[in-house]
Length: 92
Image (cartoon, rainbow, N blue to C red; front, side):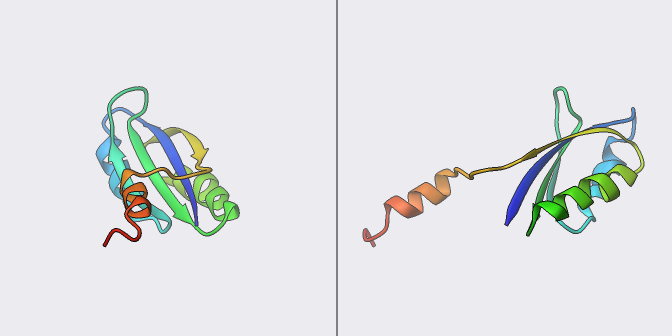
């Protein structure tokens, strides 16, 4: 599984509709409307880097209201939940 975080800027007034459209795309597991330098964050979970490339460059850019994207590919996942599970092995 390959995970990417896509940071998205939308046109004024388009954040909600763009986020809803993104949530319907296969490969996008979560969409957040956020404050700060970006308007929307999409979490992509697919099986290959090629799928990320296709999703970002062909499908996401076609969503109405999206002005700009910046994609970050995750190398490693760190989660408190996962770490607790690892450290509790044999403690049951």
